[in-house]
Image 1: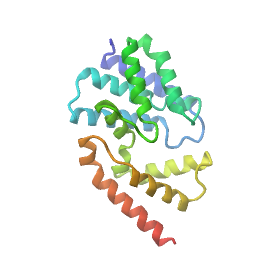
Image 2 (image 1 turned 90 degrees about the vertical axis):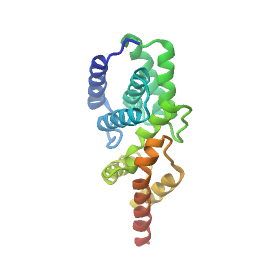
Image 3 (image 1 turned 60 degrees about the horizontal axis):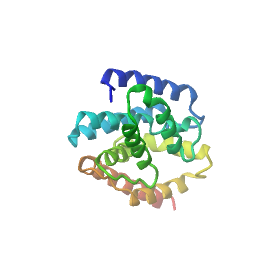
Image 4 (image 1 turned 180 degrees about the horizontal axis):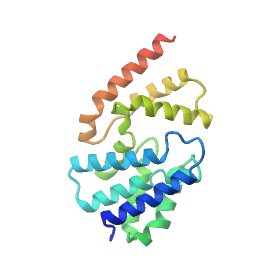
Length: 200
């Protein structure tokens, strides 16, 4: 792998530019900002988990491409994300084994998440890092609006029920995210339950 941090920044700029111009309309949550957020979260978790430099580059590259499939379709977008990665990354100095690792990381984020090693655990936690952050409600609103556009949710009441079910099934995988995010995530869950109960 010949990807230096400087080359990664150029690649990131190119991919983010493509997302800004060509993403499917209505993607209020799965936006270029979400991709940048996941890259940042993955790097922070990766540092805390003490992964090496090569693994960090594989991780950040997977984070960069993980939602690029939304350029074509929302359904099974992870498959298209891998196709895009396989098309772009050979020219960026990645060999076949490294690209396979990156695609495995991307596919691990498909719901329900299925990480098989520390790198995929980090990416899965980074992808849902917002569940345990203070900007949760802002991002949750964007996801609700996006799902409303794609006819996946019909009301805020239904959305809150979906969120409660999702929260109760979800858990963070890395020790870093369990420590930093789980307590705040549990508070959000309690708040959503109370809000739903008040409106019954």
